[in-house]
Image 1: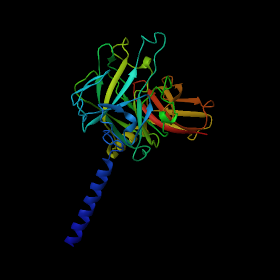
Image 2: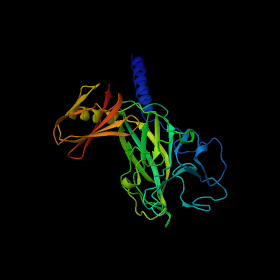
Image 3: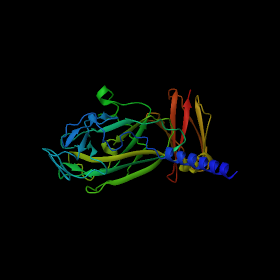
Image 4: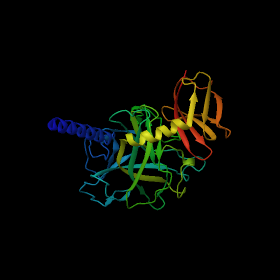
Amino acid sequence: MKTHFRFCLSLLIALLFTRAVQAQQNLVPNPSFEDTSFCSMACISNFGQVSNWFIASGTPDFVNASCSTCPPPNFLNQNFIYYQYPNSGTNYLHEMYYVDRRSFPNNDYHYREIVGCKLNSRLIVGQAYLVSFYYNAFIYPNYRTASNDQGILFSSKKHDFLAGDSTFYFGMYPHFAHVSADSINRDTMNWTHFEKYFIADSAYEYLYLGNFYDSIHTLVDSKNVVGSGNFFDDISVILDTTYHADGMEQQNERTNIYPNPVANELFVSANYAIKSIEIWSSLGFLIKVLEGYGKQACSNKLDDIPPGHYILKINSLDNQFYFKQIIKI
């Protein structure tokens, strides 16, 4: 009897341990950019050779700290000066965001460098994920300034710039990220750890890292320089079932939508005052903004929205927000 009890107890512990390990698995492949399809051993190399990742916009680079020509912390070449060790391993990502008003005085230069990867598994709708990355500002007098809104956008589609998809190129941005750093990062010496919980509103399969806002909606220290640059390392997306249980119960208690699927008119009710309702596509693009008029219930016509899956972001007057998923038929 004791032997049977010990066996059952051991089995229970093993199952709990297995579940805990699974919940802690990072869904991002090659999270610190260490694996490469080939390596030129240059200090700065084209990001296209990093395994499991692809270029979604621009010409991002990765810095190779193992290069014998320019060992850390002084990475030198004709145009750039780096003073940084990797947060881990030997490689890290370098992305640029441009605000060049000297060359384009009458128009913002909407250039971005964005990278993407296919997650090891799709996100589970309704589950909470801890999303994190380490980043570091690249500031150089009269050349690079500090900025904000470095973040991550999830998507169900692969946006491969080298394959001809220009979704994230000049001026074509969703002006939205699922998680992003709101404050300007000015630290050029230490790696800043950013992390935030995200409750999946769709079975996203791809992750994109960069700045997804235009120059007008991005904060910078100086607009009289060529642009802004940042380094990234150790990207992570980890399932957290504990956070999910509390967060989703509270959200479901506070907000109701009906009917769903919806054909023409959508009703939203809540136990808080609704400021506005944003409708986002499953790819992360803002489709429409509906007024809430400060009421706890409102209705809106959706005749002008094509059929498909959408995410509602309901903003309250006390600056809280809640997500709901709808199907337009």
